[in-house]
Image (cartoon, rainbow, N blue to C red; front, top):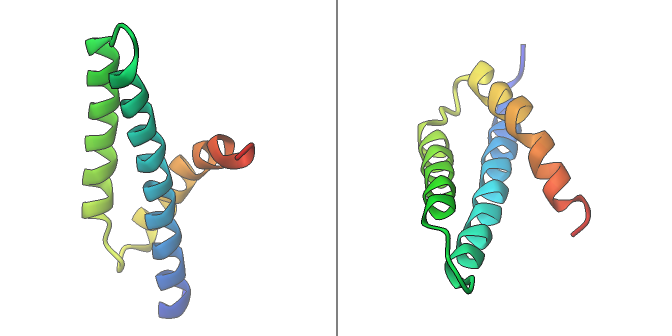
Length: 86
């Protein structure tokens, strides 16, 4: 069983992972809008992903260890890949 301190750290990790992905998608949206021929469909996909991540971050419950670990397990690998080269 995780301590309150450990769960708090994991909660912050989950928030940071979601924040990193939101940053990535914000940059992607800016690039899509600034393209010579912006693709409205691609921009809509990016905005949908941003909404999903924002909602997930807003709904993240610091008392729900299973939810926290699920967010980290599902989203951290992509965040690592995206920022490994940065």
